[in-house]
Amino acid sequence: EQINKGNYEHYMQKEIHEQPESLKTTMRGRLIRGGSCKAKTVLLGGLKDHLKTIRRSRRIVFIGCGTSYNAALAARPILEELSGVPVTMEIASDLLDRQGPIYREDTAVFVSQSGETADTLLALEYALENGALCVGITNTVGSAIARHTHCGIHINAGCEIGVASTKAYTSQIVVMAMLALAIGGDTISNQARREAIIDGLFDLPNNVREVLKLDQEMKDLAKLLVAEQSLLVFGRGYNYATALEGALKVKEVALMHSEGILAGEMKHGPLALVDENLPIVVIATRDACFSKQQSVIQQLHARKGRLIVMCSKGDANAVGPGGSCRVIEVPQVEDCLQPVVNIIPLQLLAYHLTVLRGFNVDQPRNLAKSVTTQ
Ligand code: G6P
Image (cartoon, rainbow, N blue to C red; front, side, top):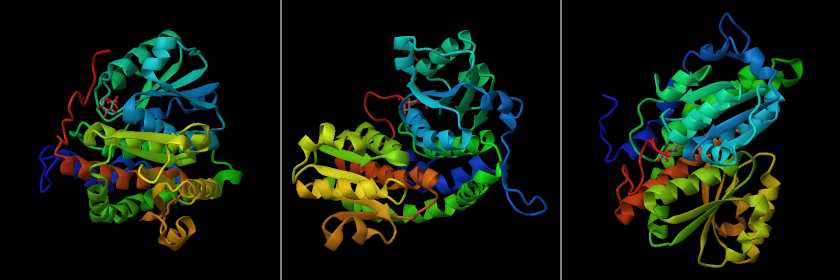
């Protein structure tokens, strides 16, 4: 029953809207709170014999392609914070091109929805040859990556049909947040933070249900942007990944040029593109980077930028004084989980742009769901 479209027109649309449920399935049986067991904790059965080795590793290297890489990038800051282990990122093909260093003392984490992507699989072979502990994070039980890694976590998001990954992305982020909790020790100093994240995970499906109500608003925005040639998306911190992933959705399905930009790099090139015509989405939800994003918005305003600002509910005036820009208000959640909420309006925008532009939503030209050749 999972592979029919139900009441939806397209698989991508269905998969976007089923995220409250897919996230619940991802977390089922893995989060423990209250009841007889008072402690809030995370259980990841597939890793239990390897957690000590992961904690002691010299670094954690995330390896993936496309959306799976972006999901790892979204989770990187919380992994760094809770594990205390350096975390680096590798695009699988680039690691192979460079024959980059992978050590016996590394934990290499392979992130792949299909578990069959050729580049990621070859990078896995390479890491195995180099003696790293290899962990798989996939959505496909029995896939090549699940079989060849030493241990792993299934994301359990359910079958994803649309070529553009949506629900797998949010489930991957949640799995990696749980991985961070599992690796990070339960010390007194980080107890409050851990509990806030676990509470945030429990509340996430409801917040995702809430943000999905922006569907009509995103359709209206898509109508405004339908004839544009290009769209920039600015983010930083936890939401640098949201900028890259939002832009990837727009380019892969709506076939519109779109670029995700690290806001901290704005002055080093992208600022030259800003004028009154080019639409720019700025992600400025509340977190430690908020005031820096406010200053980015001011600088873009000063250059008459055409801004669409994503902010936390109630912050419209703090980001676009006097209705000076279009605002998308989203529920505020724990900072490390905010990328799960923030990507959803951009998935909806990409979806509606695609329909309005008359392109194939579920099978964009030239792309495949699973790229099994190099
Ligand atoms: C292809 C798909 C993307 C996907 C990428 C990685 O390019 O079109 O949607 O993100 O492969 O796929 P994986 O299955 O490894 O996550």
